[in-house]
Amino acid sequence: MELQNNKSQTEKRQALRERILHLQPTDFERLALDIFRYQARYNPVYNQYISYLNINPELVTRLTHIPFLPVQFFKHHIIKSVGSPGDGSPGDGSPVASAIFQSSGTTGQQTSQHHLFDETLYKTVSARIFQENFGDLKQFHILALLPSYLERNNSSLVYMMQHFITESQSELSGFYLKNVEELLQTLTFLSSNPDGRKVLLLGVTFALLDLAESAYDLSFLSKIKELTVMDTGGMKGRRQELLREEVHDVLTSRLSIDKIHSEYGMTEMLSQGYSHGSGLLLPGFSMRILLRDINDPFAIYDHNITKSKTGGINVIDLANLDSCSFIETQDLGRFGETEGSFYVMGRFDNSDIRGCNLMVI
Image 1 (cartoon, rainbow, N blue to C red):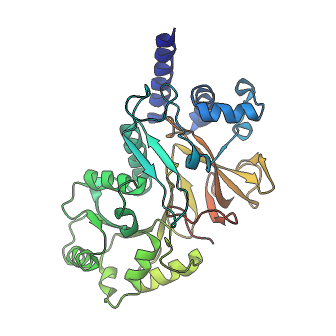
Image 2: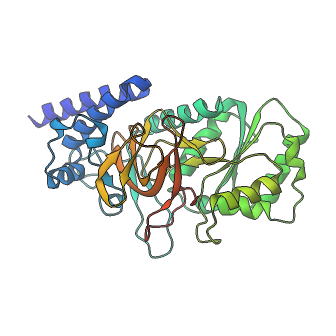
Image 3: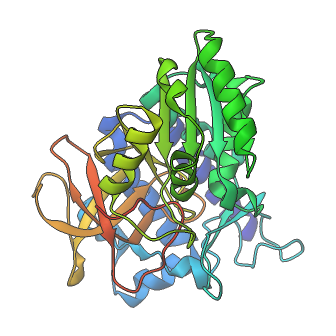
């Protein structure tokens, strides 16, 4: 009987996975509800949470009625929807995670863990989201300035960027820890030797600011016609927290560029959102943003109800098939004017300052 149940779960998961990989916008809500019912049954932690709320998953018919799991659960529990209950270690009878991502945090903070069981799904979804926003990865030289992330070996951002760098098939693509001079040598070479490719300079906030405020002459960057500078957010305790506008004003002025792009993601998510400037974020194809009332976490509304109210950000991330696709974050946001778009306004008081979240507006 147990084998039949396992086989049934495997078949259900495979069907949902295929629908994620071939997802069209018109099928998002139906697929999200099907994944909700799947995870409500096969995710032990989520199942218990739903039970405590006295919610019958079969009666949930709208996205705004789905219970969202508080992101703090990733700090104290293994959130998974695969195999039998266990701690994910070899020999416990459950599938073993191929990677375990860990959130950044200041000394003494309890950090989150996100177990990855399907590397291909993560790589495929993240690459599709990027390419739908910016074009084929093979059209880029990718320079990743991520010192704080490279100092640890369990960052989901580094994992994703490593995949992007590999897919770019560029000998000039790579990571930079503290070797800023080598980074500038590469950028100087690209400014003098254009080859038709675009250049993506992606960095954590404090590292981009350190570069912009350094004594180096950066005026040559204006010669790189298709240079995209992308900020992933995060001061990592290295610098004073600043408003997003303040950061981007410094970067655009000192780097001689018109705008700063941004990436929105976190350890507990496998999908991303991107901003093409001005802070307006567009969620990836596998992701949707809902807002919850600041004083009532179960009062959830979507983009069609109001575009001006600020609320807590709830993320639907269908790529989290093997963990939990419905996350109540500690970010504050509001909807943008474009359908599906959103702004990150900051974070709830007393929530952790973390690397992959954007700065306050």
